[in-house]
Image (cartoon, rainbow, N blue to C red; front, side, top):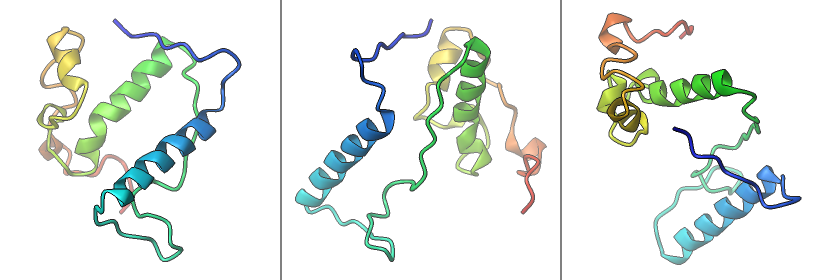
Length: 118
């Protein structure tokens, strides 16, 4: 079910790889004259400043991370149900019978609180 990725031999510099990907993308964006906002410190207001590297430990850890990704658009108020977010692997999981269309419920049932203090 899951695609296995292998790293190039002796290459575990995930942070460096992401830094190069972001830098190339940002440079291409600027060169294309796409309007970009900047933070007060001059950095592009395009990327999240923090990056946490996490190696998936086992199948259960993978499932928790996938669940987090699938539910994130609901948590942040972009949609009321996971199935309403069109840019998600959630739809593939539904097609493959791994998750049901109503997985995660409807935000209206919870009042959009998700256990966080506001």
